[in-house]
Each structure stands twice: as C-alpha cells, then as structure tokens.
Length: 135
Image 1 (tube, helix red, strand yellow):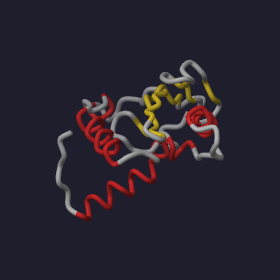
Image 2 (image 1 turned 60 degrees about the vertical axis):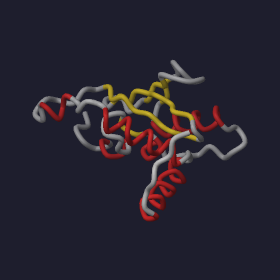
Image 3 (image 1 turned 90 degrees about the vertical axis):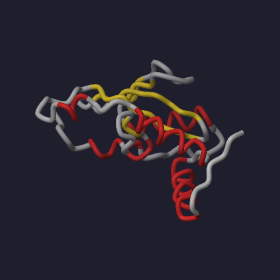
Image 4 (image 1 turned 120 degrees about the horizontal axis):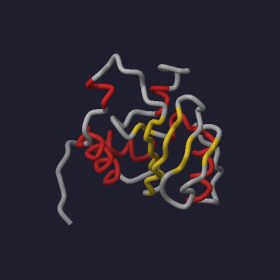
C-alpha cells in the first residue's frame, strides 16, 4: 500500500480528527479529499438564492460512512445509505443515535446530531447551518 509523509504536527491533527470522528487517519484524509474535490454548491455561485430545503449530509462512525438528507424546514433527517436506508428521524440526534446503535449496539448511543453529521458540500458540521436561513 502506498504511503505519504506528513509532519508530526499534521499527524497529530489527523489523529485528533480521527478520534473525534471515531474513524482512522486514512478515513480522515479520504473524507477531506472527497469533500475538497466536490464541486462548489450552487449557493456559493448565487449567494442571494434561497437555500434548498434538503441538504445532503453524512457521518463517519467506526469506518462506516452514512449518507443522509437534512430537511431545513422540518429539521428531520432521512438516511439514504446503509442498514437504516429509507428511515426518517425527527431530529439529527435521533438519526445519529440510531446510526450508532446499528453499527455498534454495545456502546451507549447518545450523540449530539448537530456535531455527528457533516455537510456533504464543504465537510462542516451540520451545526453550522442550524440557525441559518431557518424557516
């Protein structure tokens, strides 16, 4: 397997992100590269345009990537990949708890969904749009 060299300080930051996201350093690099290589969202091209109601999001948990859609109007999350595909939850936290339970039923599943989920475009935490453009 090919490898890359990073400075000690960059490795420490990768390790910190991996711990926070409960994944590996390799998954952190892949996620950052995936998010960086995605085209800019339409809202960046047209900042005055109203935000779309449905925002693509994802989570990484123990090496599993879970895709979902967050509805700004209702605050609901619908899982679009994995074992919970098609299930909708009243809140980001409810969706996060169910995702954790489905992947690792032996851990305490309580999670704050606003920090568990990330925007597919840009990779920022869902919390960054929590209060922006609310209906």
